[in-house]
Length: 497
Ligand code: SAH
Ligand code: F3S
Image (cartoon, rainbow, N blue to C red):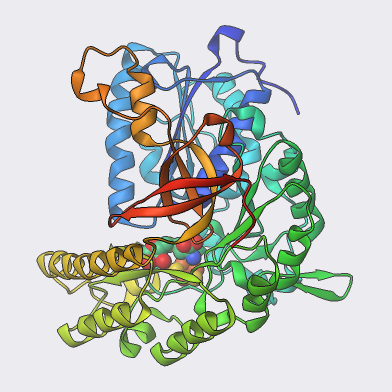
C-alpha cells in the first residue's frame, strides 16, 4: 500500500465521529487503526483536525438528519481551515452519495462500509484532484438489489476477502478499549425485512472464514482483550463451508471458546427465524459464553410481523424464548420493537405491549417507524400512523419496559455474582478529572468507585482498588435502580457463577 504521499507529517490529526450500531463502532476502530499506521493521531475536537471523518448510520431518518446538521457545522469549520479534508463513511455513504456529494456539501470523499480498506487511496485522490470531484468507494446499492449472488445460499457465499480486517492492524494500539473487543463474523444481511435499509447498505450476507476470525481473536487476546463480542446482523445464521463441511455458529462459539486469555464471549444480533437449539446448548455448556441474548421481536402482532416480512409468528417467538429459558439457566433477554409501523392499529400496538410484558426483557430498544427510501415498506406501504400516535405508543412501551427493567434489577438484590471490572465508575471518573476542583458538590464523589459488568450485561458499581480493572471479581448486590446496580466487593478473580 502506498502511504499518504499528499500528507505532510503536520497534516495528520484525525477527528473521527461514530454514529449507529456496534458494527460502526468496530468499523471506526479499524479505520482508526489503519490511519494510525499512516501516522495519524486522534484529536477530540473537529476544529483541531486536518482530517474529519463521520461514520454514519442510515437506519432511521433521524440518524441521517444528524449527519447533515453535523456537516453544516463542519462546513463552517472548513471555511476557516480550507486545508481540512472531510470524509463520510458507513451506511449513508453507500445509500445517499448523491445528496452527500452535492455542491453545498463540505465532503471530499465517500466510502461505503464494504470498502473501508480503500480510505488511504481515497485520501490520496483528494490531494491529487483537490476540489474537482468527490472520490467515492461504495458498492452501489442499486446494483445490490439485483445482485445475483443473493440466489446462492449464504454458506456458499463465504467471505474470503476480509476487507479492512485483512490489513491485520493491531487495534489495541489505537488507544481504544483493550479489555472488550468486537469481532465481525459476518457481513451484510439477506433477510430484507420490509422496513430495513441494512441489506441495501451492507450488501448480501457473507460469513468470514473461521480461521480468519480465530486469528483475530488470538491477536486480541494476546493484546489483553478478555471479552469478545461476535458481530453479525443475523449472527446466529453464520455458516461457513469449510472444504465441504458446514461450520455452524454453535461450532464457531466452541472454537472461540478455546482461545486462551478470553474470559467472556457474547454475540449480537440474533434473528429469531434461524435460531437453533445447538446455540442454546453451546451457551449452557461453554462457560465463557455469557447468558445474554439480544433477540429483536419488532412487534407482538402476527399481521404486523407479516407486513414487516419477519418470517416468524408471535407464537414461534415465544416458543423460542421458552426454549432459551429452559436450556440456558439464568439467561437474560433483550429485544427491539418498532412502534407505528405502516397500518399499525391500536389492537396491534396492544399486542406489542402484551409481548413485552410476557417476554420480560432485561432491556428493550424501542424505535418509532421511520420509512427508508428504497425499502419494500417505503415503496409499497404508507407511513400512515401520525407522529403524535407514534410518540404516544413509544412512551407507553418505554413506560412499561421501565417497570419491567426495575423489577428485573430488584431481583438482583442480595445476590452474589461475577463481574468483569471495566474501570472507574462515571462518578469516580468525573471526580478524578476534577481533582482539586473548587466545586464542593464534587468533593463527596467516591474516587475509588469501580464499574463492572455481569455476565448478563448489567452494570454494577462498587468500591475497590484500581488493580481490579480488567479482572473478574465477585460482588454482592446491595442496591438497585432502573439502570444500574450497586454492590460490594467479595473477592477478586472469583469463580464463575
Ligand atoms: N440485525 C440488525 C438490525 C439492524 S437495525 C442488528 O444488528 O441489530 C437495528 C434495529 O433498528 C432493528 O432491530 C429495528 O428494531 C430498528 N429499525 C430498523 N429499521 C428501522 C426503521 N426503518 N424504522 C425504525 N426502526 C428501525
Ligand atoms: Fe435489517 Fe431484518 Fe436484516 S432488521 S439487518 S433486514 S434481519
